[in-house]
Length: 351
Image (cartoon, rainbow, N blue to C red):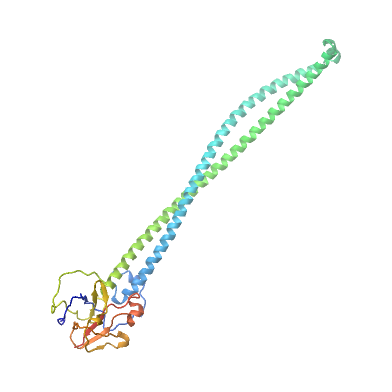
């Protein structure tokens, strides 16, 4: 049982936490599998905080990378959709052009056929006229000038007919070639459209897979953040950083608690963890505890020295053993508290 102690205006928070008689750093590092367990061993909490912090950071970076990849795939999908729309518009345009060309080619074909028939008739007539002698032309002409004009007219008509036929045949051939070219382009675009549609399907599937992976990563991150918060809370409680609730004022001489006997929580043996809080700040208990006789356990070099020079009586009776002092003790420097000092004095009665 605790000895009655004097409680002045300064509020002292005494954390009855068991930190162990022998303070030794764990030999083997904690694994991620061990840290995923709900009930962490006391000697693994600090290491698990580091392990889980690294895992959360790793998952956070992985999530950023996956989010960037998904954004990239979204952009590619959008680009593919635009290409598909552009290809479809081109196909529609070419189909209209092909329809117009088909109508024009049909019209020109009919015209050429009519002109060929007419030209054949003209050729026959011209051929028949070729048997008319120059004498007959002269006799039927009014004069020589009229004769010359008739001859030139016949030649010009024949030449014009040949040009018309040649031009129409060339136009018909050109339109046919253009139609073939348009049809080839349409076939190529149709093939390209099918390829783009396949690409879109593939990208959509990749997007779904990435979203599933991102969701799984987010779930893992939340789980490890929960485990990390749990480990940090356990460490905070173990070293006086837990949640404090005001219950009532106490008077000098009142009993405020008992020291738990034997190993419990984060300790391997009976001891009292004594802290002093003033205006929300943690202070060295040596400034408040009175000078008294004590000994270090196992020795001063391992426990860390203290220098009590205040006026408060000690919370436990003699003989007093100090297993860990205040501040950056050897155990604190070993990284046990994630770079933080030891915020109290650990003591026990060896009587």
